Length: 381
Image (cartoon, rainbow, N blue to C red):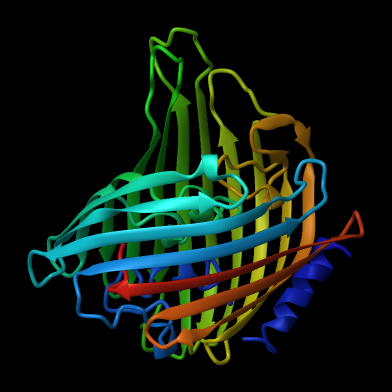
């Protein structure tokens, strides 16, 4: 099937189905959108865990994610385990300035020695209702609202907390998330390199939020730096850039369509990957008729595209292994998501099934996941 025919098919489907950068992710993010505290990610009360007026909480996330991709550069993997978090929140003013203190433990099953504790130390200062500054533990991962070719949402399961500094801004027609994530410090004796990512994601709203038909322009930039000076054993510096820009249409929070282009550029002093630059094109339709169920239909095409924090499924080269690559990516993907409540205001679940059809290879693959989250007290972080 040609790219032109796929594009025509995608446009036609928007008339039938009712599409956001990601599937709905309150199971990872919490119920509220960090860019706008007055706007719930989902507007239905059955997903709410934030109804408690307590300032302390314990929450648990059980996760199971199985990727059966079966490709040389993208064989797939299984993630199975539990995260346990606890914390205290203290409010400073009516605008929302507060501090979180606590910890989050990630326990992957079958590899207890891989368990890790992440400190939760987060200072949020609200200059007013529009400007927010965060220090310490960031509103990270899927809260950045980056697309999966650029940022892998499974980092919620393998590296659930980011650390650094973040500035959030929102008004009627513009939302912005600007952050620095210090992923790894340099250690001279062991020649461990520093790893830092600088990111920005934003959305320009083209008409009023109250409109039935909403148009917006989502954009992002992400710079990945791996370096370090005066290491005992010198290692090459890596600098990589990813960006995206698109057009999004939404109808009454039930139908969404978007078309997004991506770019990648490696501007390291010495090229260590198979490709210096690349591009990709992503078209998606999302139907959300009742809130509990979502269906997303997508087409993705890429040429020599690479993102160091992205998902191997969307990349032309395996992360960490430049010898496993494919120049082109061209596939259709359907995503079904079912979200619901097990215990009101206490326990929610999220089930996902994502079949994939590789057009040129004529090869089927799929991914499936099931998540359960519950809490005592308030939802933390």
